[in-house]
Image (cartoon, rainbow, N blue to C red; front, top):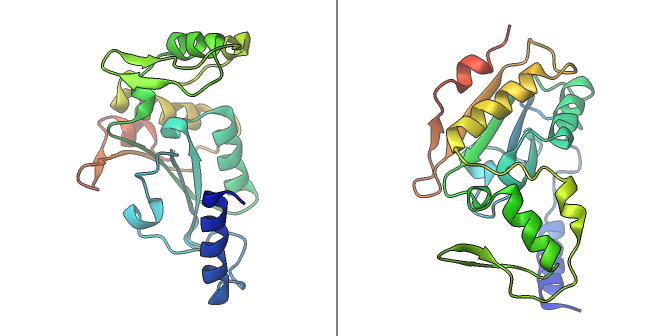
Length: 192
């Protein structure tokens, strides 16, 4: 086996040996959901005080309100009873370090992992690449606070999202661990 797989399976064995969560209910106990970034520095359970079974946590690159994220939020509400949602971006997000044009160009050249230097991302691999990247909106971020507000608005304006659900917008500071208010987000996400 591969070393990381071995580590994961060993950790799971230890976890399963004392597992006592088998009777948690399907709906989240605290009836809320968080949309946040996949960045490994973020631990929503810790920064939001969650225990297993408390809330839905939806993660993607940038914590963006993509169609799939909204699909998950709608299911969270309609079928599993969440009544409040949070959009939580973070400081020093990798989605701020490139544009749609940059990633499209990188993927057109090579499917190998790129490197990040002083001038931004650059290719270290050799082709072939793919032009399929041009068909995707990568939802990059040029202004973190505005991206939070935009995502809150996108969720609130979606035709499958009831106006009664409050959507809060915050930024997690990776240097301090604090959740920071985003001007305009609370107003944009207020329940009606």
